[in-house]
Length: 271
Image (cartoon, rainbow, N blue to C red; front, side, top):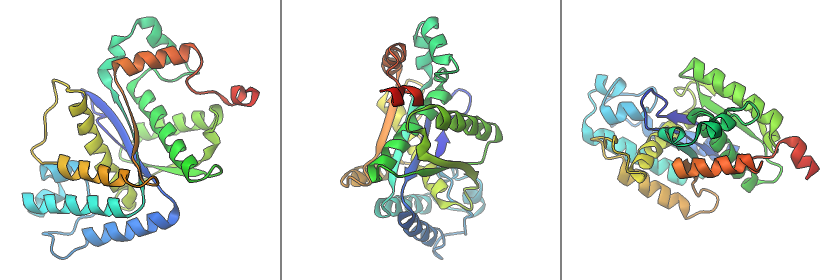
């Protein structure tokens, strides 16, 4: 999984990724590399990075990639995702929604036993639930290892501590067999997660009609939306995601007050 919009001032934070078993990942990795290594591209990329592709920066700028070539590459990579049997999961939070609830409610969410009091806390909780749900759909006894992009050391530590607390505290947390971090240049699923996170980040801003939203010059929408619709035709790859806005956060507060949000292990066993 990979984040988007974690920079200061971003109106939406998103974390997105894919859940799949080993055969699907092997098929995906082979197909993704075949696209990147095509001789027809202007230069050889060490990885696909969505922001660089959109804005023609870094390796795309150095390699003199034209708009049509970047668009063609983006389209081919969405086709790889469609055909590889991997399932998208995503979580997004409208940052400003935390300013629209009473202080007492915010303090409730910020308690250590809840850890829901910041956009980053909440988005981690939501994506964790999506991963668990997707894994459970594969098998009631499935476990999952989560790989996170290692591009930010502080965020790595934040997620690692969160994951450890989640695995130790919450019912079904034991589904997480392992969590770790990797370089997206070496792990192709992280490149796909980057593509998904960027598109989801923009899709959420459009969905919420946020006034500060600036549509990128690069047309990410058509291929991205077509990819999601195509994946939705199959139960095994149907996208699964959550978006929390002001109304959603108020509903979450009510669930936490009633202790209906996520049972801890003791409560689950007692129930």
